[in-house]
Amino acid sequence: MSRPAVTWDERRGVWVARPYLGISPSTGKPIRPQRDMPGPGRYEQELAQAMAEEWYDMLTAGGAVVKSRRLSDVLRAYVAWMDAEGRWAPSTTPTYLSVIRAQIDPTVGSADVDDMSAWAVSGLYASLMRPVKGREPLSTSSVIKLHWLLTGAWRWMVKNGITESNPMPSVGKPSPVRSEAAMLTMTEFASTLSA
Image 1 (tube, rainbow, N blue to C red):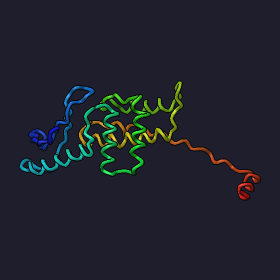
Image 2 (spheres, rainbow, N blue to C red; image 1 turned 60 degrees about the vertical axis):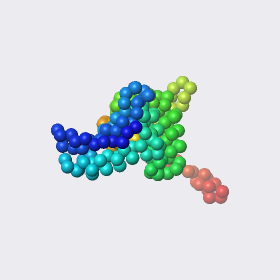
Image 3 (tube, one colour; image 1 turned 180 degrees about the vertical axis):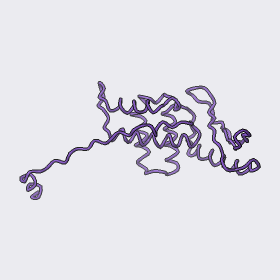
Image 4 (tube, one colour; image 1 turned 45 degrees about the vertical axis):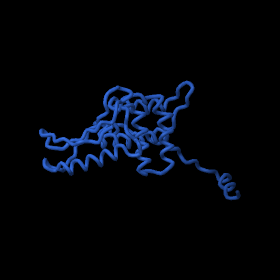
């Protein structure tokens, strides 16, 4: 891994950082996220460098360096980063790791993050909610939990230059199943009062 050195992109008029984060085990290619450092002008390289260093530190916080483009690996890096930053309740980390293990790994976990379209994510939701031989369908609330994980993770991926596209704004969140309230008879109501 190397610290990011900023370079001036003359055509676009912006400083750019592209740190080397190792080789992707899934593709064998170098991992080089890119991020523009908006704001500093042509002669403000020190400010752009400081911004790049802050981004690099955020990207690699808690050892959560993204060493693979596989969806399950990137999601684990996101969870590790959020946990290291203390961005959510302590129970959220094991919950999201369980979601990745049970719902992502056996389905689309090996897919490259750039290969995941809104259609692919919607198809994942539909397949998880259908009964399959040997597996009960997931509840709507479980799929909504997955939706929130993916929504936050893709925002983080785009913000940190891991990918340029975010399919999640085009993915509909499953609607929770609402059950009708049952009306009690007078006898049932009376029994609840006496209990």
